[in-house]
Image 1: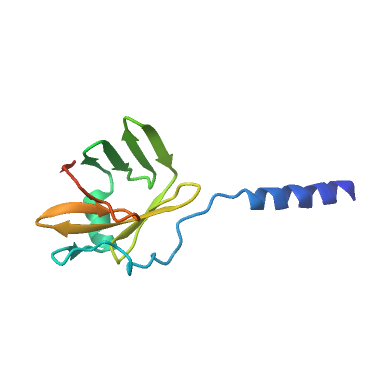
Image 2: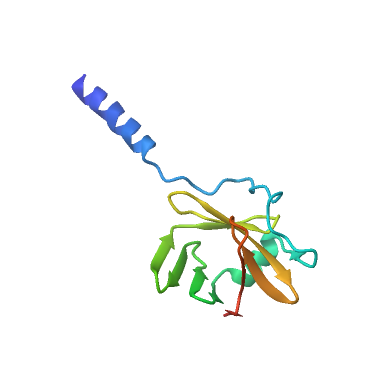
Length: 127
């Protein structure tokens, strides 16, 4: 009986500390800082153009590994996530302990990341 109670407790403890995963449905884009000349991209475009590549921004580089993992490196350190997900509304999720959502658009032929605070960051290079 003690083993059963202990097993149930361990299962409950483990369930309470699980890492949140990127959801199936995209976040709302209703409050995103879109500009009138932004061109939206979809999940297929993001997968074709970013998976397996590094995206260079002023101050940092993010890498979308083909195995589905993600890393962002800057002078502030390295931030790794086991997974990322692209959505058809141009959003992407980084599977940190608390998932992070940002949006991508094309503006004047350049890839732009829009974060949840409304900041806009132009990709300098993708390779």
